Length: 280
Ligand code: MG
Image 1 (cartoon, rainbow, N blue to C red):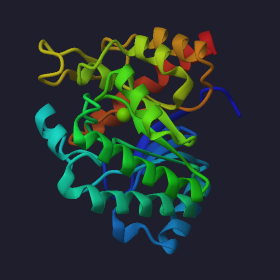
Image 2: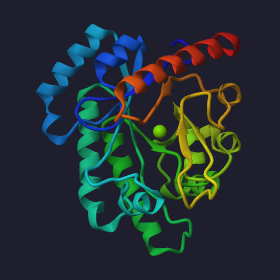
Image 3: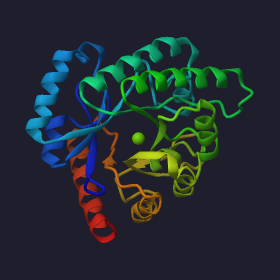
Image 4: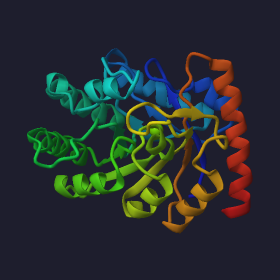
């Protein structure tokens, strides 16, 4: 496979990604797909969708699970609503994540990803064991489908994430590294974290952000790629250093302004293409 094929985060009927026709117009060969809503996760829809992807010559590298009721409005809301952590929705979402894994299998995709939520930083917290247990359940289900599970980074420091992966103890559990999330959530210098957990990183997002004035308490600001604090050249050099050769998937979460989203992703593609030429 070509080193570092470009990609974008895309969605069908749910999620913040660009639509498929936009991915096509942008000319990228790969996408991360936000899992469509339950009604669309049927064998027939999967077939239709695969035919469309074939026409457009686009491959899905990861299917991401997302759940109704999740809100990233601010850090406390994210903590309360996102992923498999909130106790009220944990059982239903774990079941839904397995359905998403089944749908990904229909699409022939061997990786499912998710924001597992704010894993308690204190392993003595009783919720910690519960989250470990449901993550195992998702991994074991995915394994039967021949899939790996990638945890989106952000909420955890590299150390917490590493400890969590060790405690889940499943050989199909890896990391989708998002450097901007580390900044947005204030959970550590992204490139230091990337080196630390490099051996787990099997997919990545290319996203940029500026630190908040109160890291960890209020959001940082997502920025167009190259205009934030990640440092795209250093990011790609570090990916090279850890031996990462997979897709560089651009994520720009401003679905409220589609024309701007498309224009900025266009510029991001240009930036990454130049860096690829120089470093790849
Ligand atoms: Mg991301």
